[in-house]
Length: 587
Ligand SMILES: C[S@@+](CC[C@H](N)C(=O)[O-])C[C@H]1O[C@@H](n2cnc3c(N)ncnc32)[C@H](O)[C@@H]1O
Image 1 (tube, rainbow, N blue to C red):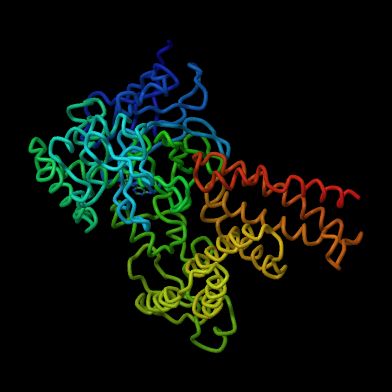
Image 2 (spheres, rainbow, N blue to C red):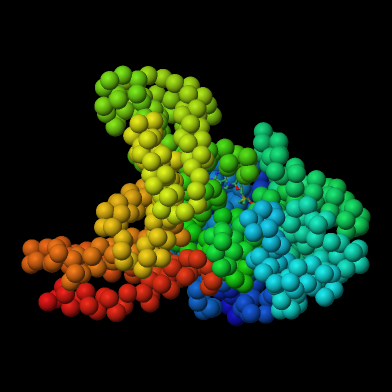
């Protein structure tokens, strides 16, 4: 096996990182001390080719595996770091940089979890079911672990290394019961603490992850404090483990809180995992509100990072830490509260969020403003909390309180919507969106778009349930119109290969299919004439390409997830009908 020494000459302020590479499948172990600025980290990358074997005995050894296992191949990413306190290209600390070009949709790397466990939100599931301590999905059976009596899906989950080796013996000997678990994430913290004795290598890797905050951001969020209190009670009183002192529990809680990923599965889907996953390298991914990479956690708890847009060698790989449908004020607050991060990406720094007007408030100050859709309040200094907002037309200035009061009114109108019957709810959502669209909020405001996306998802379900028949064509035309609007904004804030786009493309092809069927239905009085044939052919081509792209994106989602079901549906559905359509179109 060849040994290569790669000297990563870093950009002006970023660190020089020496990598000793044994193999294309790499597993960084830091050796030696960092200098006082934290600039230089020496990373030895070891071969670890055997993906299958590394979860044996419950230990999830971390590894990154590029797509191909060719020893001469270039490393997919490099770790770089800025000097302490310094921000380079809107990131700080350590971050990952592409070491070669990636095309949209390329798998950049795949990595096993350093540790995983149930997440805090497990106890909030609407079904009120317990969460399996192995696969983190809801336990739908009456099965109990034969040693500790905790709910598990089945004997396979029970014997899974993580549960059996980590908490099960402790639960059994201390007679711990599920109702003593205040927050399920404390089990993840316990597992992490147990690494100290069970797997020292992983323990040290965990300790290397970011926990320190910049001095000015030392105040912990109330969530982090609550988790720490629960973890201390659980470790010391419930599990009776006094070998972990306060400082150690606090340190690990902070690390899990800062670096843990949620599974991002869709709630109520067949596969919904209430898991928290920590990765040695994935946890170094920087954030951007317009990301260039996209994360999937597969059923083996591995992290897969894909290029959502083309990435050039040397570019920072950035994923998004926040929800998509949030305006800058709320996104930045979330990033500050949970990651102590003051984001200044291109989207955050742009008053109009890159011309999407995602948080623009409609100005009604005078008659001109009332008439013009262009007249909106935007923050004058988007990176300054509580910045003033100014109308783009009349230049009237408002305090942030005025803006947030308008958003609150819309929120409370939305919260008042009751009734769960799909069509009923769609009509009520449409009514509230219609009341505020272009009146109190810009039509692209995130509260409007979020509502419209909700409408689209509900309409999709109605269309699906009715198997594309008996629907009014106006309903479907509106559906397609809303989807195109959502897509238009997503193209800017969440471009390329990602779950949201995949879902939206599924909805679009569903609507297009209906419209094509409607137009070519022999029972429909408006039969296809030669004039409309070329339009129909174009629509048919669009349908095919939308379906192709949607399927391509969603096929990387985990088996059993809702997205994967949508991908499968795009593969199998309508094939017979398409043949008929093809005949109509080609005459
Ligand atoms: C999960 S860690 C990422 C790895 C971290 N940089 C390290 O050195 O270990 C999250 C932290 O990275 C930093 N970070 C990530 N993205 C950033 C960005 N766009 N701007 C500034 N800091 C960022 C913040 O300090 C944030 O709290």
